[in-house]
Image (cartoon, rainbow, N blue to C red; front, side, top):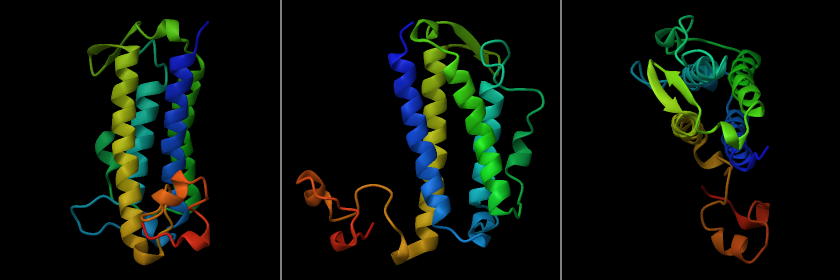
Length: 181
C-alpha cells in the first residue's frame, strides 16, 4: 500500500515536534509556566492544548468524533506550574496519539471520511487542518521562547545573516557564523 503522502505529513509533523522541543530546551523550568500577562498563554498552557487536541483528534481516529467527550478544552488553558518532566510527558502523550494513528494509515485511506465536531471531513482534510493548527501553536511556543531568551536565543533554523553560508554549503549553525535570530 502506498504511503508517500502519509510519510510526508508524518515527517512534517516530526519537524514541528522537534522545533517545539528545541524551544523547550532553551527555557528555564520557571519559564515553561510563565505567561507574559494574565491574558496570555504560557508554554505549558499551549503544550496542554496541543496535547489535548492531538489526543482528542487521533485516539480512535477513524471510528469516533475527533472532539471526544472526555476532553476539557477550557482546562487546557488553565494557569499551571509544571515541571519540565510533566511538560515533556504531556507533550509526548499528544504526539504519540498522532503518530499511532498515522502509522495505521495508507494513502488509500486519505479520502475516507471521519468526523470532527460533527463535521464530516476526508482524512486528507483533517490532516491538513491538524497540521495547520499544530504548526500555529508550535510557532507560538518558539516565539515565546525566543522572547524569553532575547540575545541568548539559539536559532532553530538558518540564523539571521547566515543564508549565504547555508547556500554555499557551509554550516551556519557553527559559532563562527554568529547566529543572531
